[in-house]
Amino acid sequence: GAAIRFRRANDSNWINTLGVDNSNNLKLGHGGSVDEIHFGIAGIGEQMTLDSSGNLLLGTTTAAISAGKGLMIADAAGARIKLCDSDLGVDGASGYEMIVGNGGTTYLWNRENTDLLFGTNNTERLRINSNGQAYLTTTTTIVLDLNTTNSSGAYIQLDTGASGANIGYIGAG
Image (cartoon, rainbow, N blue to C red; front, side, top):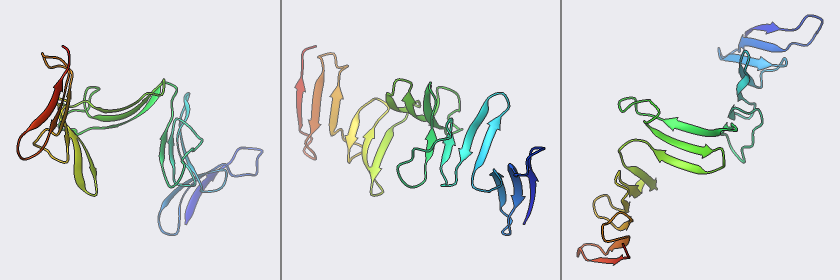
C-alpha cells in the first residue's frame, strides 16, 4: 500500500498517517500506527474517535463499553441519538430520540404523532399509540389502559378478550 506520513520537525517519530493498505482500504492513523482514527475541529478539539476496538466515541476519548462494539456519546449537557424520517421532518420537533439529560434522566421520546412499538422474537409485543393508550400483544383491542384524563377521574381498564367484557376501576375525579 501507499501512505502519506507526517511528523514534527525535530522529532523522528511519525505522528499521523494517511494511506491505502494492500486491500485498497483507506487507513488513518495516529502515532505512527493505524489503530485509531481521531476527528477534531480547530478551536474545539477532538470530537470523535474510532478506537482500536471498533468503538465510536463522540464527546469523549475514553471508551466505557462493557462488551462488544459500541457507540458512546458523552456531554455535560446531556447526550442523545436522534433518528428522523425525512418525509416527516428533520427539525427539533421531529423524529425519535434516545436521551440522557444532564441530570441523568433517561427518555425514549417519539416527537411524531405516531405509535411507539416494542417487539421481541420478530413480533410486536407492546404498542403505545399516539393517544397514549397501551396495547399488549394486540394492535386493535385495548388490553391495558391507564387513563388520567377521563372526566370521571383516573381509571384502569383491562380487556378480558374476545367477549368484550372489561374489568375496570374509576377513581375519584
